[in-house]
Image (cartoon, protein in one colour):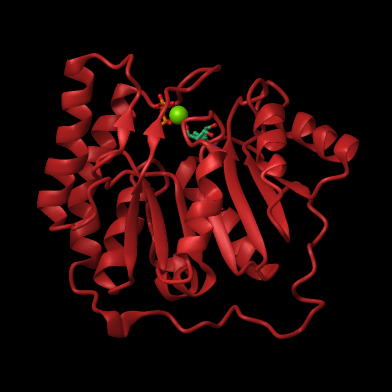
Length: 265
Ligand SMILES: Nc1nc2c(ncn2[C@@H]2O[C@H](COP(=O)(O)OP(=O)(O)OP(=O)(O)O)[C@@H](O)[C@H]2O)c(=O)[nH]1
Ligand SMILES: [Mg+2]
């Protein structure tokens, strides 16, 4: 099973070498990583490339010219992963909030499920112990109540950013219908996945606060994402499983599935 981890980065220079080392220490067969970097001023992209070269490991870096948001980074990264023939795609943050140690279990569940969600709100899931009760309450309300009620979602962690996807699921979702450019991407993906009737499983994770570096999630972004939930409903509430996209991107040609040389976009 060809597995690609897609990791968007913006100023993650201090996290990326350790993350790459932890990912490859898992010893997963046929595994590679795609870093989608938005011209981070701290040189994240160059650092990722030199770690790959020094250790001769398959880490690819997609360099985008400017900061374009988490949602577009994932869309570009997923398209690339599909193009090069990934059977499974893992999405995760670069700041260690998503521990690589869960990945083997997530991948094994893809035999039975179309997407596996690393969840903070399912039974057994946990948020960083350092969170104040007020912060926890706000996050729980936004995820497990506000978004879920508007969209009538079964998924408990509606903004989860740690997932493993089967190739067929991403093709069926048809990424061209996903409009979110920012953090609302996670909610839109969760909603479309449920509306299309895919088999989803949430596994509990311990979500640790970022170890180093700065959060890119500020209050205006949070408010915009909360309002975007209504748009997401409006765009997709009529979807049914018959609207699954056709697997146009699958290719039996080995040349198509080769890793293309990365160039700045
Ligand atoms: N390429 C790209 N990556 C981004 C962008 N914004 C955030 N990221 C990356 O997306 C991941 C999640 O961002 P974080 O800042 O950790 O956001 P968060 O985890 O929701 O917030 P915290 O809990 O405060 O860390 C990290 O790997 C970031 O470097 C962006 O505009 N472009
Ligand atoms: Mg984070």
